[in-house]
Image (cartoon, rainbow, N blue to C red; front, side):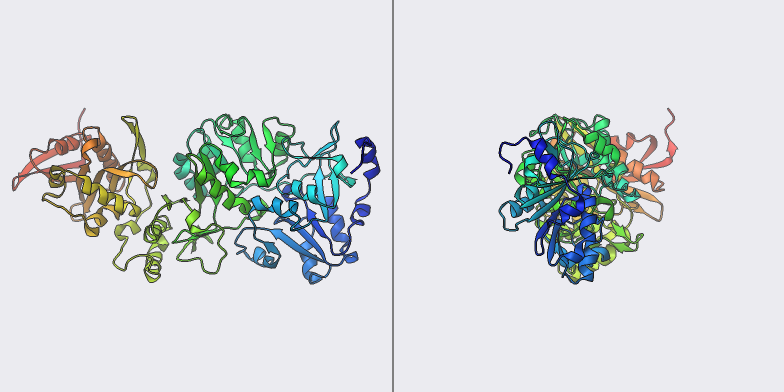
Length: 626
């Protein structure tokens, strides 16, 4: 633009009213509007009031809350005045979004800047909002860099609303006065968003996924994540980093607590990196001239290769519904400005490629006050946002599963196991109808009760993490593999006769138990979802006497390391909480390990001989006297 002229002189010459600036727009042009909370509200309002003078304008933007009724004008004029093109990757299932479906352009956020810069979609006019210029003539795009910078850099005409309330954010967030054609000075509050509503389901999910996020992880946090749940999940972590589409109030609070240090990110160490901010005035003050924060465009922040370059990258996303094969439907809601879902797939794929990274999809199990399951047999009438091959960890308030590498049958069983118990029978029936699982398969008692998270515990034994936890229906194959690794004497001790095969019937009673009457506790080593079972403890209730018979098996390499006692302790806790009166067991008189396990309980144990076997019995109301 201007040759060697002083930028400040040019700035003065470019100042005009909003009406004059909008008057430079011509019929048939494509007009970009700055994104999300960075929307230049004064310019957009003026544009909406002048639409009667235009024909065939195309408004280009990220799907967003509208401060001016542009979609309504497009509807009313049947597109003759203006049309809307909103980039949005969501399912558009809600009534509000479905009504605007024809305006939506599905595109991953990382790809939008290229669309502009390549001129495949030429931008004729860009309406943006910036800070006042600094001493060198640079204007910061503030809370909205994302696709706005690419639009401004490639537009034929750039109209900037200069707003002193816009925070000056560092990074690649700047455009120079010399690259702006018209300046409209207008001070007004930056758009803010209401707090995400809290829910009991979100809090439970937070507790479940906390152990999947390790110290030193780099996080992307979806704007749809409930704030209290986010704090609950992460408050006890150390040295977390942030590389995310949006900075939010919750991220600010975690930084204030010292949880986020950005020291171990592996890329952009010491910096929180994002492309936008959505939240409160306090958040906007926090990011203003903060040297620890950098905003970059979406083709950098959302690029899967850049995401993957971070250490232990964890993507936290919120889904609207999932089917039994793992397909994901997602829609952003008004409280997160509709836009978070558009970058969802970028981060899921990038996190998976990261060393030690993982993607976690959070799904409240029900909608409509518990009347509708969000786990459905098949998503057939809804746009898929995340293909099933890209889905790894899934968490509802009823458990967490890892679908990576799982067959359709394993996926169906896993998704049913974390659905609300009221809907599991019907989901099992539908899964059989869809041929996703065999007709002979059942969930048996697993349809009863809620996964008892309180019985989980992680130990370190010989430098290796061992998780002690209740069994899940998805554990069937690894339980089967455990039995095949047992030595001959261990098989005799467990089954009282020689066995060389362990079919579905043998394993089913162990892996598909309820958490009240027939509880199984596992000792698992290895990655979540791919762990190896090295120990099994179980009780099976006899309702006639309200006593439960217990049985154990521990892999040879893990014997003598205290796993049996840990599992017995968990069985004891679970049985007492569930109102069971006591335990029984039948074992060989020489099985000192089983006898020792019983004697480790804080109750008195009686031993009698029956047909050459030692019959052990203890009642929970007969406590030992210290």
